[in-house]
Amino acid sequence: YKRPRQWLSSAGLGAMGFGLPAAAGAAVANPGVTVVDIDGDGSFLMNIQELALIRIENLPVKVMILNNQHLGMVVQWEDRFYKANRAHTYLGNPENESEIYPDFVTIAKGFNVPAVRVTKRSEVRAAIKKMLETPGPYLLDIIVPHQEHVLPMIPSGGAFKDIIMEGDGR
Image (cartoon, rainbow, N blue to C red; front, side, top):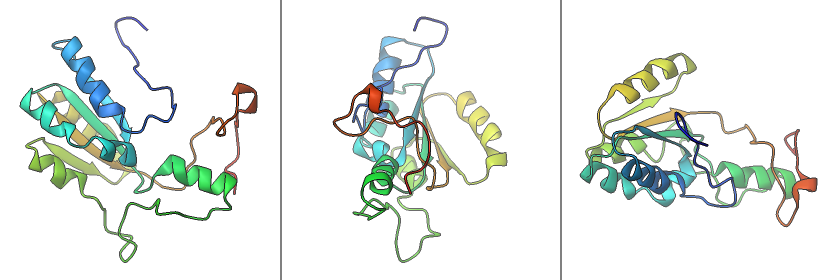
């Protein structure tokens, strides 16, 4: 992938936490280029401390969290291979499921990184526009349904011939 746009990915090979450090590295390697990290909430939590780096270095890294309040890929495995038995994959407060937890907006602001949460699809376009127009780092927390599965996927120990292309496994 060469200019004008590039895609940097761990290719889904078990690299939770890859997004933000990779985005910071891409921003350092390409001065003046805006870099967008599209990340899941669980993955983002793995290296949340890198908010300090992008703020201190004033890197133009925009973090877009697709927040389903679950370890989504793990939930997908639980649904497909373990009869939907859950093993602490819900990141929210089980006593109050309407509460958004953790509060990534408050955490980002604690690092002096501007942040906004979006809960409605109709708000997404304007929120992305604001994110891209804001100089320096920025965090956009987009609340998404937790029921969606991500396909295609390859089961653990599988090969490309074992790829799952459809269905939710439930």
